[in-house]
Length: 209
Image (cartoon, rainbow, N blue to C red; front, top):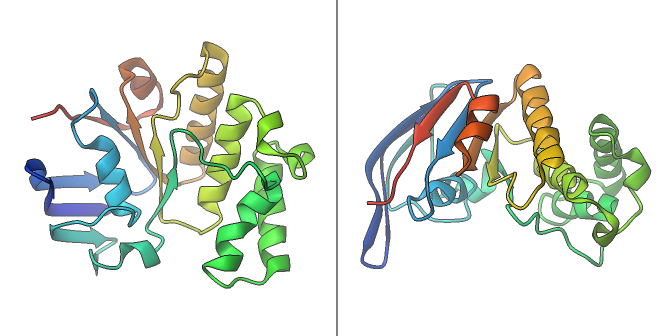
């Protein structure tokens, strides 16, 4: 279980979060729903260590987590809205880049893990292709596999259905539900309430102040 207690975050003159509290149950899907400007994506970025937290406390499975070193703890694997795959690298190389360069994992070990994830996600035949040749749904799965390469405790998705058609949106729904069946804790940021209702155990509506 993940607990956020009295989290505060300010951007310039705007207070994004002030004494914000949240509980995410282990193995469940929590969706953060609402229009832009409410801080949904910022919350994910903070948990991934991509944004600083001004103050507050994070507790994961009963253990206090340092808010100043989240980028090194792999608490949350971030699946970006625009995927952010490196266009000059193959799918396989996109997956092994972070584990080998920033976590010093042996290349062969990272390669085996990446191939296993690609097989699980139905992308084995795409290991050696470049991102430009992938569909939106395939890019989404590659981005998920990359997030999973660091063995995060939680996977966070930023607007995972943005710009996808109905068929691909259903594909993303299946992916998230499969991860839930596997016991993976997930946080989903979306403006699409219907999508959130289809995938979530809990929904939290966040609106701009």
